[in-house]
Amino acid sequence: MTVNVAMIDGSTSRLDDELLEALQTQFRGSVVSPADPGYEPEPRPSWNAMHADRPGLVARCSGTADVVDAVNFARANNLLTAVRGGGHSVAGLSSINDGMLIDLSGMRAVQVDPERRLAHVQGGAVLGDMDRETQAFGLAAPSGRVSDTGVAGLTLGGGLGWLNNKYGLACDDLVEAQVVGADGQVRTASADVNPDLFWAIRGGGGNFGIVTSFTFGLHPVGPIVAFVATFYPLEDAADLLRGWRDYALAAPDEVTAFAGMITFPAAPGMPEVIHDRPVIILAGLHSGDAEEGMAAMRPLREMGTSLFDMSQPMPYTMAQSGLDGLFPRNVLRSYWKSQYMDEFNDDAVSAVARLAQDRPAPMTMVNMFHIGGAVHAVGPEETAFAERSAPFMVSVDGNWTDPAQDADNVAWVRSSWDGLRKYGNGGVYLNFGGRSDEPMREGVDTAFGRNLRRLAEIKAKYDPKNFFQINNNIVP
Ligand SMILES: Cc1cc2nc3c(=O)[nH]c(=O)nc-3n(C[C@H](O)[C@H](O)[C@H](O)COP(=O)(O)OP(=O)(O)OC[C@H]3O[C@@H](n4cnc5c(N)ncnc54)[C@H](O)[C@@H]3O)c2cc1C
Image 1: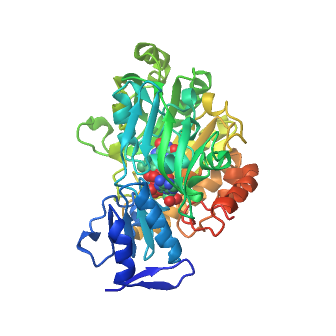
Image 2: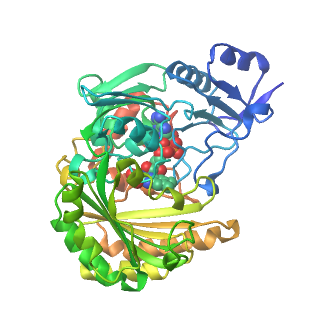
Image 3: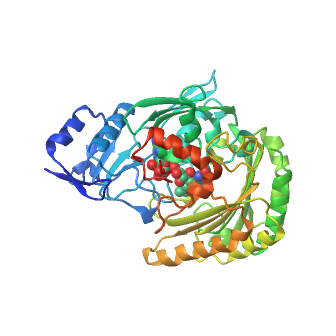
């Protein structure tokens, strides 16, 4: 049987049995094409239903050796190749049609060394895998806010979550990584070994190789932490956002505050008063003592007349998965756009509040992030992740389900983002970038700024032919 797979130059490669068998012989995972019974269902489909894919060949890796073989095979045959960690790319950067997919979803082991406070996390683990293991020792690494998001893509692109202000971005907490390069070589990246590669993967995305293992430093967190999520009517958003802003700017670094605006679904287990109701949720997590944390975040709960308040001390893992229900995999069609703000002045507050009330789809969100403390303590050139001073970020997250509404929703996000542009500092968060007909490089120049040149040089050293090109692409 012959398998047809898209090549980098746009043509199609016909891979015959003999060639595939040579790959399959040593492979401990599986290598499948559309004709194989094991091809469907995909173990970890793309999160964004707008980027559902159909690869011509899938290498489901069981470990680093499989990843090496898959990379060597793809390179030798000039195959267009995508890499999937958690599959949560909003832009569909782990989705591919006809080309080869190197899928790490079977590589999700996490091993914690409690004495040295380190976690070794395989490249296909999701945040929930990591939190489950680290919390067994009362430890945690900064990550994100939805437990099904991949550790890999989130960390390589930065990593904004509930521990940012105290412990930094996810990438700031990385102490070592094992990286399979475009040449099939396995390298260690750390402050001492291949420091240029280590610098580049802390923010520079999947451009430099496939990370098969991350080693993170861990911090004592929980197991019970103070978590605040207070639901208010969306009509009151302007006043509430002003209060939230002032609170966030003065709050201790233990608190990372967030404000989300959405029409809350009629979720079983949640009170009817917020069913199908446009709301603004003022939220925060305090990473220290739970009682102290509840006291420190009290103002977020008393900023107006709330509809519902689910704030309480809770297991850290529960807080980390509290938003999961809003983001089912392979259901929502999504297009997001973000921008950093050097200040969130009253004009910007009014514009964001107005925008939130104008959302075209109930699941579309307008979100405000407060970023400071440990994120700002790292210099803009210390890691590839360049944005180290803006205290706020706004993200316009278009989410809908009907394919017929793709164009309208994409257009709404674009025009909303343009409208907010005058309040932003020009920087975007690449992990929150959506893609419709944009080129792969969209936003890359502005996101990396003065770090782009050094990134391009490191790309030229480790991936001169741009083998890893389905990502926020840095051209060598
Ligand atoms: C519902 C939802 C919630 C989110 N919440 C947050 C949040 O709270 N904070 C935040 O910062 N971001 C968040 N994000 C954005 C998220 O960080 C990015 O989408 C990220 O790219 C997802 O990583 P992944 O491994 O799941 O993605 P994938 O789709 O698997 O990959 C994304 C990119 O990383 C590359 N890649 C994946 N694995 C590897 C690897 N092992 N080695 C090298 N390259 C690899 C891929 O090739 C691709 O270019 C969220 C996204 C969604 C959809």
